[in-house]
Length: 79
Image 1 (spheres, rainbow, N blue to C red):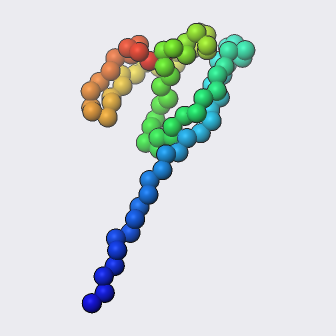
Image 2: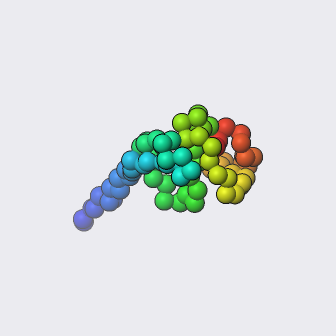
């Protein structure tokens, strides 16, 4: 009789160094390490970064659905 061990799958945490520029004011920018989420469609910035980035052009406002399926309204702690 031959037994085989189940295949071990290791998951990793993938991050990337990201530079975020304010295109209207190139002096205002920041660099951070960001977690890569392959299922994400948008990038959310913390409200605390607003002063560092200055005024950003709003292209579209979206309601956000979290992993728990709750809906967050715009400007509730995110930029």
